[in-house]
Every structure is written in structure tokens, then in C-alpha cells.
Image (tube, rainbow, N blue to C red; front, side, top):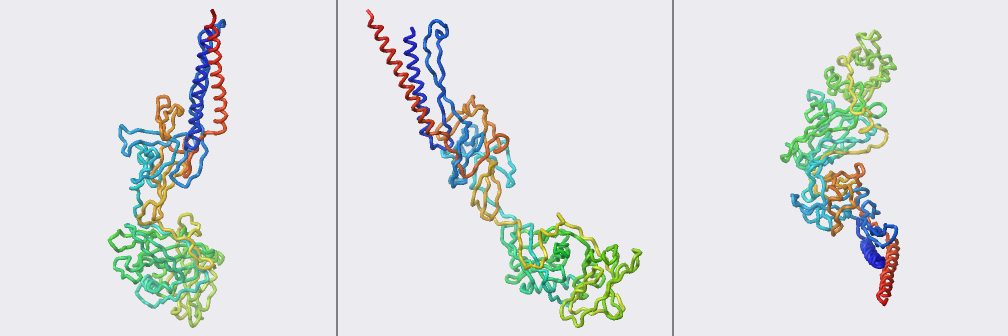
Length: 577
């Protein structure tokens, strides 16, 4: 009869509201649990077969089901630990029960990312499980995508790397006086004479016009301090010497500087870099600008690119050509340069045709272009310039056809009319890199200033700091200044995350209903990104839970009233005689 159905309905109501109260109490108890998702009880009507006949109605009661809202994003709270991790979006961190993975290893999934490094360097969840990730190369390339492993940091280190490049940017003061070079040392070659002059700067660096220091590293991570000294040889033209303490190089003497290389920098009229050259300590031209250094101490030979910026290139007189024409350093001529703009204004149409340096009958110097009239428009002579006498300091003679000649104090012109040396031809210097000429060494009227000095070597180092990027890279910073990527964290995505099996310590296990996990990289597709130094807060809303509690309490009271009322009716029925 329907009275017993009513009684059953009331009892089911008591059970359903008790279940709802269990859900509410569990939510409230986990209001501060990181990564916790508020659950809710869903009620459904139970219907008996007699209840659908249309004649008699028999109450079926109520049933309950539990909904786990795993898809709701919790708010993120910042912390002071870089290994506190939060997921923003879809997915779970993956943890495992063993350091060494095998067929019996348990796999777990969590949104509670309060990881800490243990005494063996593993990142571990408060449950004791190990965080899973893919090991990477330092550039972030995943080594083995099929085999993630527990994230371990204790054995991670930064091995030494020898310096292979120096990037130098500085300003050389344009108004500096020409250095007092001695062109009478007479070694027999221009480069030999130049080296002898530069060795004086190496022995006493205070003779230089400007010095920039750098620290290089050898193949074992040893620091080697190096200096680059600049001396001005002519307008827009400087020598530089690279030297170090003799204890740093083979056959060097501790406490005495040793020359390891030298070169020149030439500037355009606007102060940008036109050309950089580099030679080893013996004078051999190094076209690739890679300086070989015989470091002492049993380490590998250094090979260092001396990069002073992208040169614009241009038209220059090659030092070997000047020496062969007896117009070089050992002939008391410090430099001969060519300005294409002024040359064109003087009617010079082909800068690759020969030039001659002439002395007229009055002892004045002038420059003749195209003496054989190969162009059909030559020869063209510049206006003559008087040579100062006596020469108390180096002098630059600037001719109106774009040629400039810097002579030393010991220059003695031949009796005129006569040609000084032989014919010379200019050569084209190609630009390098972007050809901009302003991203390295410059020459302006402002003070000397090192803008940057960057080398790519470092000594060995240990891990000093850890960060995790939003795309899941575990990045280590080391005591030697190096930063590299170590791991990439695995993010697991499920077809139905609400069907995951919850266990203690904020962990879940997969079930048939949830489906197999898909291991993905953070931030790709609809996969969550990772926020370092944050934790995902519980999604429980206390006010909502209190409201639900009051409703459940009243519903429980109503169901109990049904039971008591039906009981009274049955008593009345039993009392019938």
C-alpha cells in the first residue's frame, strides 16, 4: 500500500540529505586544501512501477549522485618558493611512487603542486611521490619523449666552457693625439717594426690611449684576465694590442705582460667601423679574426674570435701593398687612407687605378691618380701641401682628392721633383654581418667608454637557483652565471577527469571511466600552462556551502517528519478493531 511507499520515500530522503551533508562537510573541511575541487551532491527522483500506472501512486523516494568538478579552475596564490607550481588550465602534474621506474611503479595525478627538493635532489610531492618530467638538452630539446623520468637536480652541474668569442663595444675618443710611434727600429719589415712599438705598450700599458679588460676562460674553466690596449696611429685609424700576464701563457713570465695578438681598427668619417684586422703575436694576418692562445697549465689551446662589431667595408690601401711600395711603416709613413666621397668630388672615377705620392720641385707633396691615363681622364694631381719642418709630432696631410697621409717625425722627403716609393692601388674591403658599423667599436668626439664586453666562456658551477617557465621548462641558474634548461614537466590530460579515483594526499589514480592519460607539453593546444611560485587554491565557497547546509538540514527535518507522520497513520490503522 502507498503508506509503506511513503515511509520508504521519507527514509530515502533521510539518506540522501545525510549524503549531501557528507559532501558539504568534506568541502568545508578542505577549504584550505591546495588543488581541491568542491564536490556537490546531485539528487534524482526514484520512481516505482506503480507510480506510472496513472491509477495508483506509490512514492519512490530520492537518490543521490556525487559530481566531482575537476574542470573548475581555482584561483592562484603567490608564494615565495619557485618549486610551488600551479596549473592554469586543463591537466594534472604526474608523480610516481619510485625513483626508478619499472612495471610495478604507481602513477598518480595531482593539481596540488607544492613540490620540494629532497636530500637526493628529487622534486617530491608532500605525499612522497616524485614529480615526472622529460630530461632536456641545455637548449630545451627533449632527449627522450617516450621515457619521462623523476626530476632530479643533485647531479646537475654546469661544466666549464672555454671562451670562443669576445664581443667588444666601446668608444674611442676622436680628438686623441697620434701616438708617438718610433719608425726607426728597423727590424726589416713593417709588421716587425709595429710589433716592436706595441711591445712597449705591452710592457707599460700606461703608454696606451685606452684599455679595456676582459676575463677569458680556458677549457678547464680557469679564469684568464686579458687586456686590449688602443693607440691612435692616424686620423680614423688605431692599433690595438691583446696581452695578458705571462703566467697565463706558455713561455711567459709571471708578472710580465705577454703579447698574444694585435690588430687595427679603421673608421669611416662618420665614426662607424669600416674595417677591423687581427694578427697573431708574430704578425700573421688572421682573416677569420680567431686568435689562437697557448694557455699555460696543460689546458687546450684557446681559439677566440675577436669581434668588434659588423664593419661597413670600404676602399683601403692594404698594408702589404704599402710595404711593397716603400710607403709603409718602416718608411716613416704611419698610414695612407682614402675617402671615396672627396675622391669623387675631385673627378676620380675609378678608385682601383694606381696612385702616386710625389714631391714637386718646391719640396711640396701631392698625390697623382691614374698616372698612365688608363681611365682616359687622368692623370689627376691633387693640390700640393707643404711638409712642416721640423716635424715635432706626427702630421696628417689631407689632400683634396680624398687621400690622407700621416707621416712620423722622422719622415724625410726626397729632393723634388721625385716620386716617393712606387705606385699603390686601393682594394675593396667587404662588409661583415649587417654591415651597419655601429654595433661595436665606434669613434666619436665623446670620452672613452666601454659600452659592453661580452665573452661566452665560463668556469664550472653548481646549481644556485631554480625556476619553472610557463611552458614547463625547469631552468637552472648556476654559480658561474650560466642558465640552462634541465627538464620539461609532463602534463597529463584525461578524456573525463571527473571519473578519476581520488586517494589521500591530493592525489588521483586513473580509472576505466577517466580513460588513459595523454602526456602533453604545457601550454600546447588546450593544455594548462605552469605558474611557478604559486599554488592553486581550493574552489570551495564557504557561503555557498553554508547555504547548502541549511537547505539540507531543512530537507532532512522534512523527511524525518514524513517518517513520523506515516508512523502515526500506521498506528491508527493497527488500532482499528
